[in-house]
Length: 227
View (cartoon, rainbow, N blue to C red):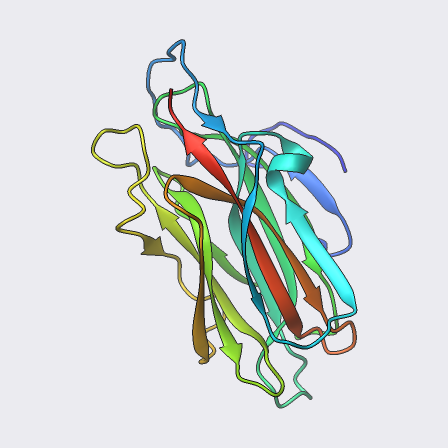
């Protein structure tokens, strides 16, 4: 892993490793710095979905633990199944952790981010992205589209996010928004939602290393609070 801080950086996303960059120019939200800070809890709660089948390979992205307290999981990219496979599913997944400016009352992004491979298996070329908007938007969960049993697996994913409420000191989790589905596959919808005033800071999954089909997925949620 390497940390680079420069504007408009180009990066290559690799499922085999991770890197850090600081390229986003879309983040300018100014507010006076106050003596108080936003805080993200060190305690993580979790919400999970399981197919009931065993995935012998595992992957993860832990924004808060690996990069720092202000990092949240805001972007996911996925690859589809190989062309020769008639099933529809996510065959590989990558994620992006973005840093938020906790000392700033407006809680904007700093522009620093880290990206990492989560799972890798044979797949069709071409990445499908789903990401949280840059301004006043904070990830609070995932929605999955899944295939039913007996061969249950994850077919598609999108991120649930919230804006700050009218006070500006809490999240309006009662009125969530949703990013687009990464691929557009149909399936039964499963919601993995953080509790009120929690943000999504990572995920773990188990998958079949041959097919790439995700068999288990768990999100990590941490409380976001203003003093």
